[in-house]
Image (cartoon, rainbow over all chains, first blue to last red; front, side):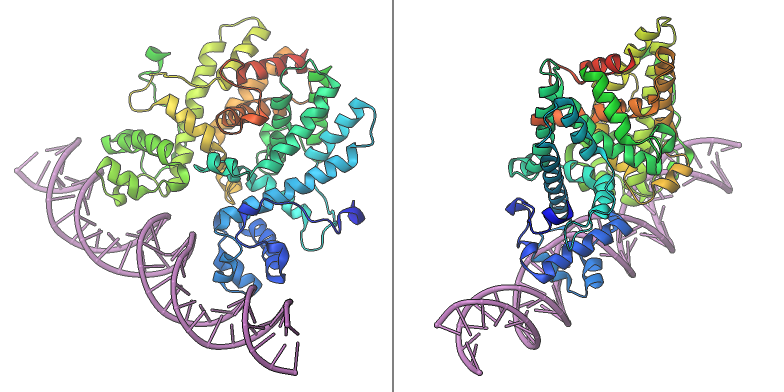
Length: 223
Length: 223
DNA sequence: CATAATTGATAGTATTACTATTATATTTGC
DNA sequence: GCAAATATAATAGTAATACTATCAATTATG
């Protein structure tokens, strides 16, 4: 994974940013450091002013890249799902056994990310922590419908539908493929969150993983 | 349901509010109208000033009931889950068949709420809409752990664990009862959200319901 | 009816979420 | 290598948010 992705640019919808952060040093610094800052203080407490101080730049310079912090979070999320799609496609294409293919796909989308150093300025492990803690906020706004029309969530939906296609190969008769996969993808983020914060309502931990739970679930549902 | 609950006060943790809104006319007005206002403009755009204008009261008066809008949302959520617990207990206690009991429980926690007029000043159908759109925000904060220690999410966790107990009656061998139920409860809110906003990644709609999907899921997983 | 408690009105602070302007630095194209 | 274009920094300013404090007016209760 490390070597393969190092030179590939993740595709992110142009409407999400004012100026593409990948095209300049400052832009990359904004992305790199916003990940650390959001992880440490939480998205609600995160402001462009604080980020500016952290990277030694002016608040107004950051506004030239992103309209507001919500769009920045949408950008980070899009990047994450784009990266996830890559991992998914790359590690499932050559598997001929349908069940094995699905197992691999579920592993990819439900496993916690540990240090994958595939890209220079983005720490995927910490970005994964942000997605677990904050991704839901990109969707739960009054503007979802408009932003969905603009294509802000396209990559996320594409990841889901790629897994749906694999599910349908395994069991074409199962009538809830989409709901099953969206439940697995969103649910695994939730289970990771519960493992970290509300342990009394989850069975997942370091030994029994979220991935095991969903592998078992999918197998039972699709047999 | 209507008659039974009309005189029962939902239990909400005292630490959530400054002054119990159930003890005064203004308090009840705050609860009643905040539900309508959050539903119409969204929680992110909701402010105590706007609520004050709506109910013809001063902003500062609202602060005497709730420290901030986050606590108000936690209050509404607690009330909701307390009400859900009531419905759950009431409609499952006399069912002797274990599988039927579980089916009923899943129906209760996954069905969309349509006009249940059990309480005078709280519109449960609209509160259910708020829970679908905003409940996740009560958990996804930097203060989750402290608030969890204070008992802010006790009722929610209790609802989950009541269903877990029923699951264990049906199949004591199944090793992921907690994760299954937390996935169903949280996942059903998510599926309702997808039905409303991201239809391409769900199978649930008016004819094929979220409830049917989860009934099918639970049956397959626990057989 | 007096006292206590509640609510309303006003004012004020710090922070957030921006926008606009201008000066300075850095790139790039010729 | 220099001029022109572009990017960034610094400063200032506005409106809204998220409160807190004070005091007067109203309402409840013993």
